[in-house]
Image (cartoon, rainbow, N blue to C red):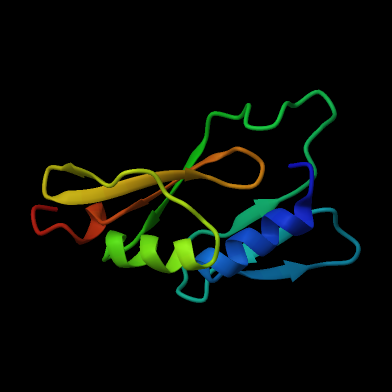
Length: 111
């Protein structure tokens, strides 16, 4: 990440995370108010190119279309909604070019 504050603000605004900052540490923890995984954000090394990492964050969203509409109002555009095996998903990029996805897979009745 090149701009930790901008990246944290993105995940706070669009996904409801809260930043936990320890002034004696270079890592910012992004904590979801709904529990689950904590995202740890820190400055990338100088040799790492933006968007180079091959990790994709997938967020469980019950209503993908409604979430996409809300995000569009806040300036985040997702691509087309795809359908697969009883669930839907859509993809986008965060400010550093990392792949993110929203998916209703965990809410699908076949799971």
